[in-house]
Length: 550
Image (cartoon, rainbow, N blue to C red; front, side):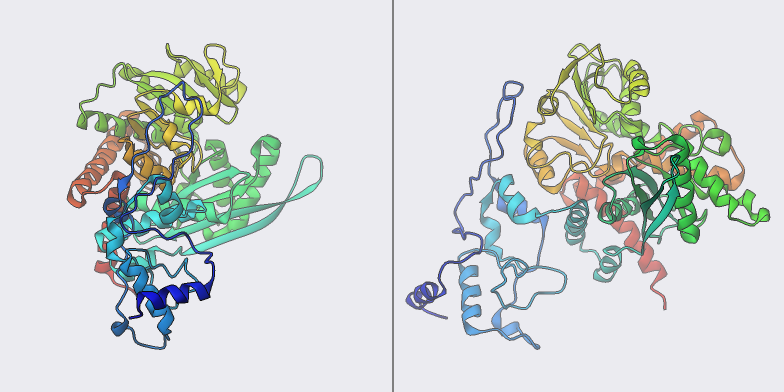
């Protein structure tokens, strides 16, 4: 071990470092959170440092080996070893992914963290910089998966399988527009895992669709199927397109050609698409007809379950249109029971007033809850006396957005987020609750109707503020549950009434809620991590029982 004077001399020779500033083990990091706009709406809260021991449960990474434990082909220079030991003695982090000058061999699938580092304190803003480092939606998925896998000690072999998608399909296809011009489109279908059953997941039409986003959404679908204990795996797809710029006839040709391009990559017992962002029952009917047209005549009648979310007349299920929003409300009801919270008189806000958001708002109305603010891509509105969700849904149907609704005042995005309410239902796109926006929320519960609306940094802040979270893979699983019911009805040539569908949905999602609640207590963790653990435990059991071929 080098002496202190030798270390100082070596530091001078190395010159200035470009690495992150090192701090002593007992230093409290006080990086402030972003300033909250519209402070008059909500009183600014003091940034409270949280104990690093609790925060560091986010990674559960292994400790670095001692020098005498290192073996193999890795060569460790004496200066690098001294530097690493010095960092450990100061209680700092050894992380080979960030520190390019460190020559310590990286352990498989992980990074090293020293035990002393747990005793530091850190703010959520610093966690944003040091721990999460999420650059994309898929980074968020991986981060959440690793956190749960470490906590539950998931079998490392099964962890490798679940960390990888099965198939990723990208198709480029031409379509003739009404003008006669040929335009090229890009479509995606990612199939994550089918250990529990056929791949299952929606199709979205949106300009931001890309392989990274679809990969994340497909992974979430695997977890949803496992949490709700239905025999489906996870998949997702979409076309990179702004559907508002195309006519109905053009959208039909785009949908049909995309379906044809996917070919045998979808099928009623292999991969079953469903509606998602900017797609609906009509899109599913076009996919159904195109797929059936490619099948031999004798096989067509037994392939009607190739898609779900179809129109009722084409084999759809009652209750499917409202299923995701209905599931959101069922989980809110269970949360309210657990917290002795009366929904009558409760206030709520909704971000995104499409299928999920509008149905969640309408289904909360009979409970006596009051909708006071809504935001979508066109703008945000507010009325402290309440907004009638049924009337607003009719308005949005005609005007394609909430902007201009005369029975509420227009507000900006920051004011919407800062609106004081009991429940916030994000039902739009991913990464809406972040390190910048989470501090603005002034609610008791976030019920995630959208997929991935909260990134890891936002999640940490919500927990620090004591805001409850019903995670997306539980809260919005009503859609895939009723898709399973539709799939079953098609296979059995049955048609269930609405009461039967709602009753079965309620039983499924409440059982999933209780399973997650049990894991929260057993592992002393948050609801999102607990939901992941429920899913991973079922998948782990499946793989251990079946084994790996060959």
